[in-house]
Length: 131
Image (cartoon, rainbow, N blue to C red):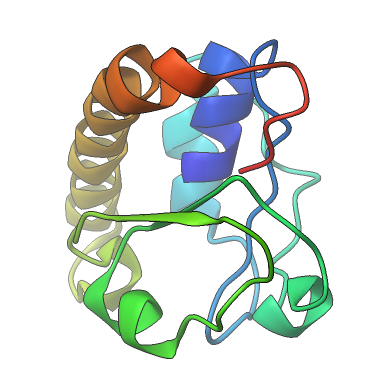
């Protein structure tokens, strides 16, 4: 969801990539929650951090404590930024309750990314910035 939000809301300022420590698939609840905002992530795929280990990034944002602890060191002057969000995929319950958790986490991530992009990142943003 973070990739879709950042691409949609600030994609003109950043080149955005995303990866996970345990890639699997994009959850249907995430697709549904993002569709409610008019953001289609149905063609996104869950990627492994291994796909990006030799690349350079200006910023690496981690969105859960596990990712922060497992994130590799990237070459160059990468700025690491961390904020822990609840993992909505870990929530067990009926479909509507799961979707409610995905919506809440989606909104928390969007608010966080807006603040980050408008403050620390915006001060140094150029079209070549990679996230």
